[in-house]
Image (cartoon, rainbow, N blue to C red):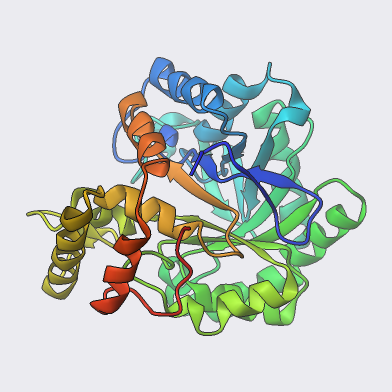
Length: 338
């Protein structure tokens, strides 16, 4: 698939490219990325036809938004789609007073969860200031899942539905944003949000991949029914679908358990049979679902980005997908690229 392929964004009057650029790495997660590398990735993405960019206040305590604005500011604004997030408010702080973990040498802001109406409005305006841009098309409520909030999640979820949703819904009604949604690590949270409120879209990290298709049961069909778009990040399940079943492979941000290692090794056998790179299969599988218009890739180097773009357009024969299904390595009802 051509990364620059334009897909309709659910029910919204908006088109996004099938490949989108995610900015968590340029927030200096785990280790630093210099300004030249950050901007270089933006320019390679742009030159490859990528026109959808996703960022968030969380990424590097504002650093990713600052860098995103720097790299996109002089592009024609109507030529690209931008998304950011609410749920955290950033406050100016001395660098020595900020706990940056897991970010490194990040923005000079402390982060504070805030899912209130007023906090959402402030976070939204602050993001535009850091970006130095007049608008974002899409805004997600960030990290109201069990993975991030633990036992507090039910209360946090209610706060977000009462506060964030009310604020974003007003901004949508006013035409300030085109689409509002939820960005989390669990499809179940997305489904509950869609059942309770009128959301346009979701950003789902790592829960619809070559290894995980449980969201096909109820969540993705509900999205199709409601016209809600789903953008998928974490298509490599945090590593193993890029590296393969190798020593030290990561799954869900931790060392991959043996059962996952064995399953990936079997998928790799099918890849070898058809001369298909495992990462190419992982990326292209995601966007074959009709509710998923775009896959978000976050990369650390220009080389990684170029690899992702190449994998995204690598030819994959129909027999490859058929063999995965015949060997019960992929659900029979999972849509696959044609």
